[in-house]
Every structure is written in C-alpha cells, then in structure tokens.
Length: 423
Image (cartoon, rainbow, N blue to C red; front, side):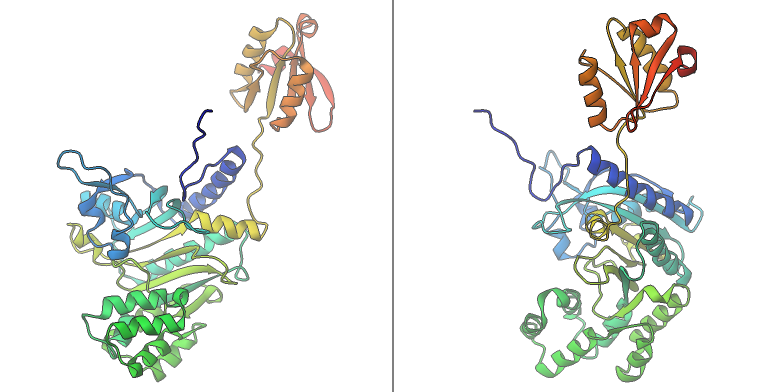
C-alpha cells in the first residue's frame, strides 16, 4: 500500500477557493498601506541566527526554526518581518529619505504548539516606519490598522485597539519591583490575561515579590477602559518621571486617532523585547480570538542592528486570526475563481480552438478542454469550475466563420463571427 503524506501540524494547504479569499484580503491590505504612503518590499525567508537573536527575547529565541548548520553559517527562518526590514533599512540608511515607510505581506515561522489562530507557518502584513519620533507617526500606524479593518467591512462593534506605553508600565512597576526583575515582571504582565489571576500571583511570588506588592501589580494590570481612564491613572497611581513620560506619549498619540476604537489597557506589553514606547494590540470586541494585530514603537532596534540611532514604529496584522473573525462575521471577501471563457472544441477543431483561446487571453481569463471529451462532458466540467461563458468551436459553425457562445448561468446562446471573438 502506498504511503499517503500528510501536511505538517501548524501549517495549512490552501486550495484555489481558499487561496482566492486570501489574495482578496491581501489586496485590501496592500491597497490601504499604499494609500497611507507605504511602499512594498520583500526579503529572504532565511536570516542569520545572530540577527534573529539580536534582541528577540528568550521566548522567541526558543521558537526560531534553526536550519542544519553547514560550514560556518548558522541560519534560521524569520519569525517576524520587523527585524529583516530593519536590517534592510540599516544597509541603506544614509541614502534613504526619511521617514522610510515600508510594508510587506509574507510568510514567517515560529516553532510552537499550534492552536486556533496561531500556526507554525503563518502570514502577516508588516508595516514599518523609520525616522520619526513624533506622535503622528504612531498615529499613522494605528489609523492604518483601523483603515485595514474597515476596508474588510469591520467596525468598532467588531474590534478594539488595546493600547499602552512601555515607559508608563515600567515606571509604575519599578515602584514595586527592582530593575533586574523588571523584564520578567513585564513578561508576566503581558501574559496575565492568558494565565489567570491565581497563576499570575504565583509566578510573581516565585520572583520574590511580596503579597502587598503583588496586589499593586495586579491593580496596575487591571487598569483598563476608555481613553478617559488616563486621568484616573494620573491621579490614583501617582506616576513617577518614567511613567509620566510614557503617559504623555500615550496622550499625544490619542489626539490623532479615532478614540471610539481605543481601549487603554495597562496589561498590554507586547512579548518582543525590542518595544520601547507606545504598544498596542487589536482584538475582536468579544475577546474570542488571539490578537488580530499588534505593534508599537521600537526606537533602539536600528542602533542595535548596527545603524545610526533612529526612531521607529510599526505593526503587523496576522492573517490566520483575521480570517477567523471575518468568517464569523460573514465578512470574508466574495470571490469568483472561474474563468470568463471555457473553449470547447467539437470534432477536429482543436487547432482553431487553441487559436481562439490565445486571442481571448489578451483581455480575458480563458480555459480550454485538454482531455478531448464529449461536448456534454465539457459543459459539465465548465460549469463545475465556475466558467462564465462557453465557446463551442464546432466544424459546421467554423465553415460559416462563426462559433457558438453560451452564457452558462442562463443557457442563452448566440452565434458570434470569428473576427469579433478573436478581436
């Protein structure tokens, strides 16, 4: 018995109808990014391990697909597009007019347990903006996320952007924890919604944080609400200088975005270690799925990868979770995968049928019988693949310089002169 191979766990096959939907979503995202002045770039799937681990955080370091070492090269598959795009920016930093606004829609890989909305191989729209430290740069990214979602038929009833600032969060946490414990505490805060309050407290306790300070940290992570909650944070949590810097950055960005889409959430930290300022994640309103999008400011990454100090900000939209939400809301793009014409040769007319197909392909999508089937079987097949029109190329019609064109949806037929159909 012949062995049947299965696709690996955490990766997907996309048959024509599914792929057409994906391409329609990609087209919407591509269109919106270009409308905001971003230009599309591409890069290798393979990068050096040294680059990928430059500042990725321990969790992502363990998720990198490392390739078999050959010679002295240590290579792995990219886990995001921000790091490769930053490498590209550094390579031509001096000659590029600022700000640099790039995007890519591409695949990447993380070695982790597959689950709904998260795969080992996945696709994202990644948008990066290099060279501006102004709040309007962050706002441009947030507004682009909103525009992408709206272009797919989603509204503020369907999604919200949870926004925070790393300086605000870290400043508040430093009042109750030490600098050396801060990265681990931030990582736990970022996971707090997933692991639950009891486990969150237990993990903090393992770090040597006493119960009183744990209660303060829990109070910080529970600060969630509309933008007006920032006034409460200012008055009740008594931000220190670092936290006030982050709070001001957050307030400055909010003046340029549509606040009906915004939720302040101090538990948002973003897992990747390179974020330095405003951070945000986009979720479905009911909280059914993983984040639809996420991003923020990473002002130190360019310098870390060998470039001149440069402010930067950006985000990514994940295709897998977005597709789940669009499907649930009945908002998946309507696509038609059938060709406009199907050429059906009857009798000894194949050469002429190919000639007609070639002419029609100058302006149309065209398929043609490749099996030498009967006309009945050809009509059945044309209907099955969703062709719009059937061109019957028969010997009798050809003698009159004509072909028969049938609308497959209605069955309506018309004899068309060859010179007209061949243009």
